Length: 227
Image (cartoon, rainbow, N blue to C red; front, side):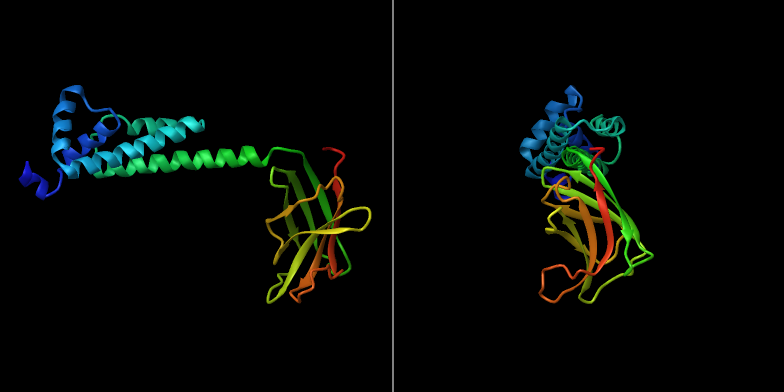
């Protein structure tokens, strides 16, 4: 036994350790392997690693209902191992990562799409006659997420940028974010578009002045009637 440990655990022994870690090892082999683990710190460490991976996978699966195909792949990893053991450990880790990714993704989707959703069509001004765009405003726990998609605006950089604003009937402007070009922009507002119903985009310069330049390139009204 000692001589074999000096050269590391064999492939078949590692495969059995993987099966022992997720309780898929046959009963007749379990007692003998557990005795070997007790006598070998190396095997004990490998077994602990496998058991930790299995625990993470089970906890993540219990927290979120994964798609059927993913659940089938994870369950397949818990069957008795016939492939090389090092690949078994790698697959267990991949299963954990996949389940956790699904859990995070589903949690994010369910948390973000929790409220009303409005839209705004943005029209060009004389400063950017070829520009156009649309915005989708969604209420979340953090505030209003605004997904903006604009065409016809040239890229601004080197201290120049676009700024987006929401404005109410009294003319009060609230900044909701800045960007360099208009494709797939995400902005955030802490005020409700039910009250601040005008969405504008301006050209700005990093000059220390936080007020709007007044150089509007797009203007639109938030459509709240359908919400």
